[in-house]
Image 1: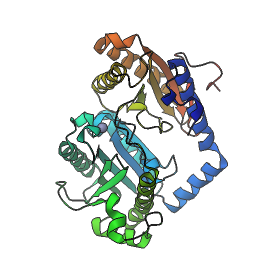
Image 2: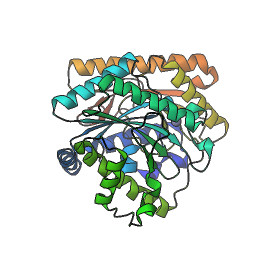
Image 3: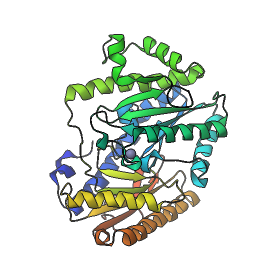
Image 4: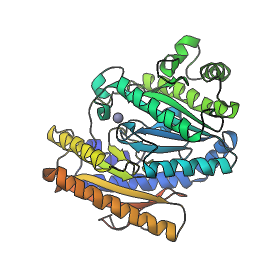
Length: 379
Ligand SMILES: [Zn+2]
């Protein structure tokens, strides 16, 4: 992904790392718009029309399309510190309701996946947002699921909310059954192949569908069928991770704080902390993210010559929609700038700011002022 020759693991200076990030964004847009990806997406959506939203932590290790082998642009991601969300937050409620409305008007059902994350090897690789307390994060996401059922109906026939765990050592999904207290049945996909004695690189989809149906007896058949490729993809991904002997990312190495929406292109683990614009109190997550960056510098995990604050707001149409996105993105970068100046004055002078808008149709990230390199993303 991107040009590995200037990957930040080589620890070049901040200018070079920022240029690398813009290149990564351009490459992502080119791939996204290419005929292969466009047709693959179209075919995927024709075969699997259920709209899938995923609520997740700002931790960059949690990349559901990558972990489930789903083409990019299918799953709608929503990120916040610790995967903490509340449907009472005015903006979050608007975004989720608008997505659900759009899908339903197209005749689609909606699967809302509410995630928490943990590490099976070391609790300190778990979620810092919950002080590494996995049970507390499970209780929290079960509450969000109840809010979704309150909003979209307890029968779950149009909008089906589910709780999934994400085990980051092997990128394994843990599917929780529809029970309310989180203590009911669950299915750890890291153990799926063993229980079936099947080849994990070529899972038996009929058997998987039977297991899914047993776990979610009231889930509409259409949603079950559209959840199946994520399950099969995750089982294949886990097998690949095991075969690759991937080094477990023990440490935080993030050097980018992203604020806003449209950061799908950041696949590299432990590179960015991503804060969605959903919570009415953005200062808490921003201060927490800046604290992580500061600690990364103090412990020599990243160069201390600078870090990046990247703000982005997506737009679907030229004109008014784009103009609003520019204002949103500028507001977010200025707001984050103020929070970091106030909370971490010794870190603030090392901050570089890039303010951008994202064309949702092409996933092209364009700078709107704030020091973006000249010949890069301006179109
Ligand atoms: Zn987390």
